[in-house]
Length: 351
Image (cartoon, rainbow, N blue to C red; front, side):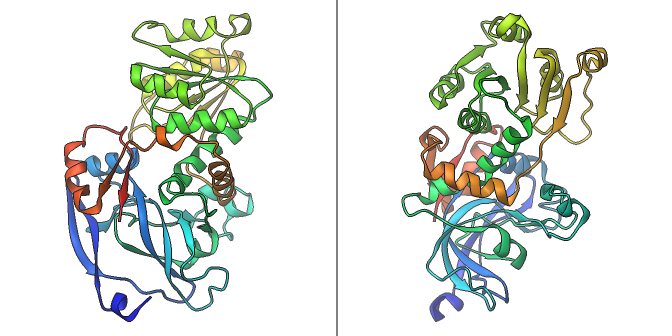
């Protein structure tokens, strides 16, 4: 970092309260031992950020004003003492968390449930200081041909890869994805990379068109086929239902629907998170006697991050289907205000 940068201010969008974002000037951070400072080149908006903007977040935004945003890529501008595996000027993707390696869950290999999971917000800023735990585990150099906008997709794609890995797919199995938004498109890419046949269920014709372009083998438009269970069964061998279902909406009614459309002995991945306190009605008789396995999936692991970088680098994700536009950091506050009622927009914030 140059002396001018050390004495200068940067622009950053801060979260003050639900519906209250502010563009501020704050000092450019410096790197402590084990840390790096990254000059952010591109950050991405996402559904989680829109939800947090409307409702707040008990963990990520517990103390306000708080830095905001978590999908980012940039260039290392300063390397702290003891960091010898990264260098100044290196193009990197920075993840929003890292495990401790020492707790019960880390020892079991379930690092996303780490009891001391380090979290990082602050992608909507010109610079970010990355704490030692994340610097050690989840700051990754980028392939030269991968753009910063493409690299910023690593975090959500790693979450999709986590879900697909938990599905334990067999060759050519049919997986139904409930939902057709951005995360559904990433799930499609992850499922196709794993060799699945993919059905996508939704109501929005344009999103379903994008799902097909992303690689879905078939789509079910609920405005034309309102009985989703029957529609899935018509498209599966023996009318048995899908081998597996990934729920990517996050509503109690679609959690219930996922159990109804999976075959006997099938798996249901509850990927979309419902609002805190939500209650779900499930047909317990069907779950029990049809031996249906239900499981939740949360977040990512460093191993999925590395896999995401490799697949993005190999062109497995048509990134143009996911990033709808480009805006400046100065326009971000108004962008959230104008689009507060949607979770679908993913824009590249160019610094």
